[in-house]
Image 1 (cartoon, one colour):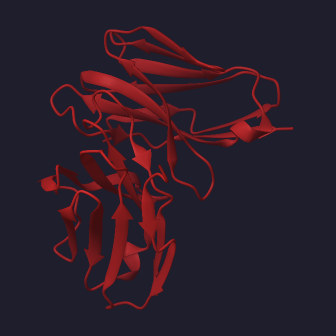
Image 2 (cartoon, rainbow over the protein chains, first blue to last red; image 1 turned 45 degrees about the vertical axis):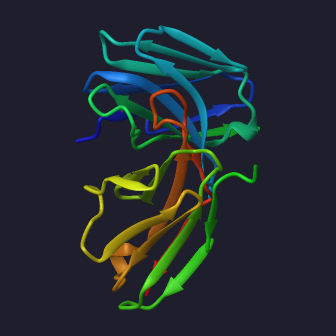
Image 3 (tube, rainbow over the protein chains, first blue to last red; image 1 turned 90 degrees about the vertical axis):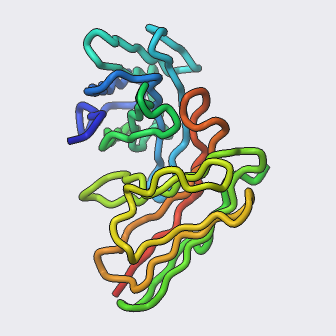
Length: 112
Length: 115
């Protein structure tokens, strides 16, 4: 089974609305990362949050981490059509800190 | 920096043929990863290198797959012989210090179709 799983699998919202994606994982982590993948392109790293951090911001992105619940959320505020992409949660385990394990992703559609 | 460079972008080959995918990581990055992406299985880590040395190849599906990193600026992933089920997008990524401090930088991928 997957180390990290995103929820929902797919999300469709109107431009200007906020989008929230969740990630749950099973094993203790060193850090958790979020990536974006536009159709037909490679993944782009968005943000990294360490296990001792609870919240992190980057522009319109807000990431939270709750290690007691083994979960994270990615909030995109004031979404734009250009935010349409797949978003992946990725974990770096404490026991294997040099590799990143990706979840199945959330497909976000932002309708203009 | 031009980023992680992969070639070719697309490859169509017949079953049984040898396929070689190429990757040039970002200069100065000490880790290189090969991933495979399919709709059914998502992103799978195949193998990764640290300072040109293979560290973990447990994700390589079969002996038909092999990977090399002869120097810090070049890596190959070879499939011999290729099969239709190998059809996927193959990504190369590089990073500084593995995943513990920085994220990965991905290439644009190679879309492989085996007919």
